[in-house]
Image 1 (cartoon, rainbow, N blue to C red):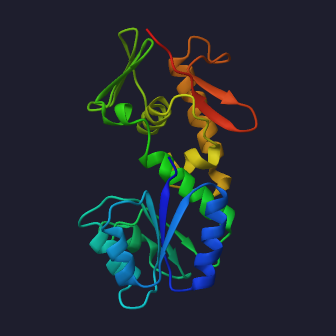
Image 2: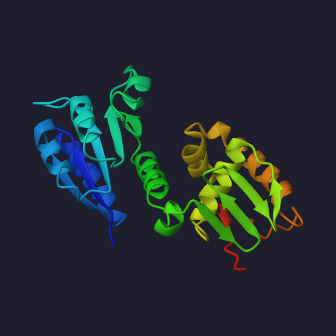
Length: 231
C-alpha cells in the first residue's frame, strides 16, 4: 500500500516539483497551500508523513506542527530557510522529526523521507513487542538486555539500539547513511564510519565467528541487514 504524504507549502512550483518527484517513487501526494488548510488536512489522520514549510500564510509552520502534536505523532519534516533555530524546531516545544533547508536537493529529501518512514513503520508485531526472540537471540527492550542461548551479552546503548532496529526489520537492507540518521540522528556522511565501527563491535559480541556473520550481515555496496533466525 502506497505511503501518503502531505506537502504544506505556499510556493506552488515547489509543491509541483516535490509532488512529481515523490510520485515517481510511488508515494501518494496531497497538497495544502497555507497553514490552516494544512492543519485541517492533517486532522484527517490519513497521512504517513507531512512536509511542512516554516513560513506559511494564515498560520506558521511552527504553529501547525505544534497543533498537530496535540492529536498525532505523524512524522513531520520542516522545510526551512537557513539560519533558523533548528534545536528549538526539533525540540519538545514543536516536535518536528527532521528539517531540511531550502534550496534542497530532492534526492536528499527523498532519503530523509525514506529513513523516517522506515524508522516509524517497522514490523508492527516486533515494534510493539517488549521481548523479541530470533533463533538464540533474546532482546528484552524494557530492560535493554540481550542474551544469546541464555548468556547475557553487554552492549552499549547504541549497539543495543542498532541491533534492536535491525532485528525489528529483518531482511531489509539499510545503507550506512540511513542507519546514521536513524540511530544517531546525524546527516553528515563523513560520520558514516561510526556505523561500521558499531557493526564490527556488535559482531564481535554476538556472532559465533565475527568474520563470517550469521546475524548482522553485509550486502556489499548497499549496506547492512539482519538475517532472521528461527529457533
